Image (cartoon, rainbow over all chains, first blue to last red; front, side):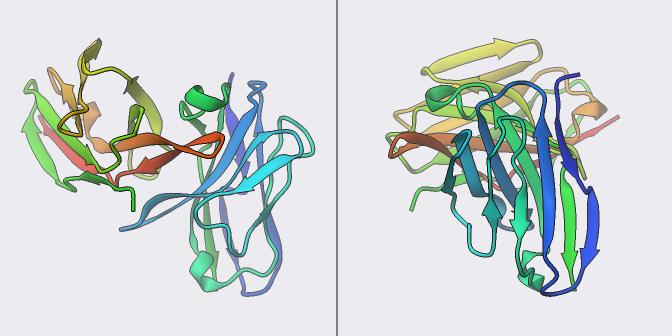
Length: 115
Length: 113
C-alpha cells in the first residue's frame, strides 16, 4: 500500500530531551515536507526537501532540524524541545516538484507534547 | 502577507443537500488551488485541485475558481453524514524555485441525517 509512515504517533516528553520523529514513504516521491498544525494557526510548513541532500526552511523552522540522506526517509529532529513545540506534526510527500509539488500525501500524524 | 481565508463554520446542512464551501485568497499571482478534507484526529487528504477559471467536477464534488474575484469554492452535492469533516483550502504561489502552499484554517462541515 502506498503510504507515508510516521513514528511515533504519540509522544510525551520533557523540555530539553532530544527526540526524532521518523517519516518514511514507499512511493519513490522526490518531494517531502514537515508541517505542524495548531488550533487557530492551521498548517504551517517547517522544512521541505526537493530531493536527497536538498533541504530548505519552511515558514517555522526554528528549533527543528531535518536530513534527507535517502529518498524515502525524512526525519524531523527536535534537538532541545520546548513546550511551544507541543503540536500535531504531519509529514507529507509528493511525486512531482514544481507545479505538482503541492499534491501531497500526508502521514497519519504525530502528536507531540512537551512538558 | 499572503492569506487564505475561510469561514470557520460550522456549516450545517441536512443529508442530501448541497454544501457550499468558500475560500478567498490575497495573492493575485496564485496559480493552483487545492481542497483537502480532514476528519477529526486524522491527516488531510486531497479531494481535488483546480488551475483554470471555471468549474471542475469529480463525482459529487465541484470546484469553482474565479481568479478575477480571487475566490475558489467547493460544492458537495447530495451531502452525506460521512462528508462531515473540516475542509481545508490551500493556494499555491511561487517562492524562488519552489511552489509553496498557503493554507486556510478550514471550514467545519456537519451533515445531519
